[in-house]
Every structure is written in C-alpha cells, then in structure tokens.
Amino acid sequence: MLTRIDHIGIACFDLDRTVEFYRATYGFEVYHSEVNEEQGVREAMLRINGTDDGGASYLQLLEPTREDSAVGKWLAKNGEGVHHIAFGTADVDGDAEAVRGKGVRVLYDEPRTGSMGSRITFLHPKDCHGVLTELVTSAPPSADPSSAEH
Amino acid sequence: MLTRIDHIGIACFDLDRTVEFYRATYGFEVYHSEVNEEQGVREAMLRINGTDDGGASYLQLLEPTREDSAVGKWLAKNGEGVHHIAFGTADVDGDAEAVRGKGVRVLYDEPRTGSMGSRITFLHPKDCHGVLTELVTSAPPSADPSSAEH
Image 1: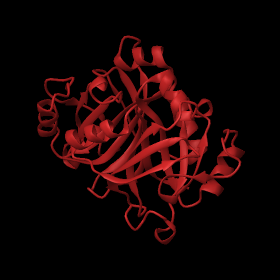
Image 2 (image 1 turned 180 degrees about the horizontal axis):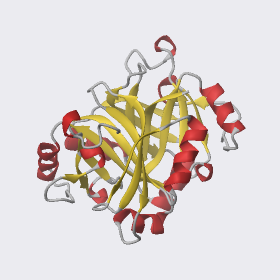
Image 3 (image 1 turned 45 degrees about the horizontal axis):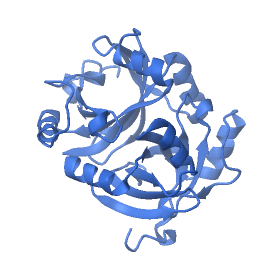
C-alpha cells in the first residue's frame, strides 16, 4: 500500500548549481547526497516535510554521471525538469507484484538500491499516463549505510 | 516559508480515465474535484498523505477545458505527464515577493484562486531549472467553499 509521496525526482545538468538554486530561493538544505553508479546519477535529497506514515517527502535532484544513463538520455531529449515521482510503501516487493498483476509494466524483475539504502522499482510511464513512477521502501534506520551522516 | 510538497500537478487527456487508473492501480481515491474556469482545467485531487505542517500532499489530475488554456497548450506539446509541482506555505504573498526579490519571475501580479479555495501563484520554469513551480496557501477550513463535501 502506497502511503506517501516519497519524492519528486528532478533531472538537472549541474547538481551543485541546482542545489544552490533551491537553497538560495527557498531555503531548502541538502539532507543527503550520494552517487548511485547503477542508476548513473549523482544526487542530492532535499527534505521538505515529514509525512503521517512516519516517513518524509523529498526533492531528489539528479545529475547524470554518464550520458548513456537513463537520466542522461532523458535530459538530452527533454532538458531539465521533473523526471519521475515516487510513492513510499512499506512493501515495495508486494506492491510491485500487485501493480504488475494489473497489467502495468514494472521495469525491474527485483527491486534495486535507491537513495539512502532504500529499495526501489519503476513503472513504465506509458502504462501510467505519461508519468515515470517509482515505488520505494525506505531502509530501516539501522540498515541505512548513510544514516550516521545522512 | 515553504513547509510541504502540497501537490504534484499531472496533465491528462481524460480526467475520468486517469482517476480510474489511479484508483484501480494504487487505491487512491478522489478527495475533491472541481472546474477552475480561470485556469481552464477540470481537476481531481487525490489525497496521498498528511504532512507535519498540518497540511497534506495530493496528486492533482488536470484535464484542460479548452485547448488554449495553459494546460491545454502544454498537453498538445508534451503529451500526458507531470505539469508542475507545488509547495505549501502559510504566506503565499510573502513568499512570492521573496522569490521575486531573488530574480525569479512570478507569473501573477497577485495570487489567484486554486484548488479548494486556496491562493496560488506560479514561478517561471526557466528560472527554476525547468520546473514549473507553484506556491500555494490552503484556505482556512471555514473559508473553503468546498469543505462541506470536499
């Protein structure tokens, strides 16, 4: 069951400049940053608010680390903007199977590693009215390798 | 001060079909629906979660009521997908002035009426790294003309 908007994924050409835009314009601060080589992105998570399922909602700013990554190809075609949206769930495996059973294409056979040790999968945008949609289960605090310093 | 992700605005060709997709796929229900003639949209708000500033986060599904509306023109160019993101604030007037003072173009001279009696303005996407960004102050419960039945 999807219980929150976990994040909005925003693709950008220059992560540092985009982080600085959100800080200077709105006061949003970087909560966490990492490089995800599997996804081919350098990313910063800006925590916007807590949610009533015990989680939080973030902006996820994404700069490709290589042109042939999914985000790199998307940026070359579309320019900067909203790349995907993500819903939080306690059970990404079960929810991915449930939506697959409803005829929505799930892009990974098994969930992969996302931000802050989470487990994620994506749904095909053509099956979701044009919206690339991610399902994400956050890591338990003790299992989040970045929790010591976000 | 922006204290939550208020909503993600998603443009669609057929509101009823898109509402049904979100209901059947994820179990999200319509919390509120209305026609905003000024914006040229028919819309449905799907409430996803509560937020720790006392508000909530929604998906806002938007179908244009006329081709020459902003959403109608956007859809004709881009197809279905994420149209804008919105941050919630207690003071849309003050925050709009603050971002204007930082050189970000604010599209309205004064906030206009948004979903559920809220007051909204938009920031130019070219000044926001490609993201059409809305600032929104919710109506107080007593002032929301739709509050009796959402």
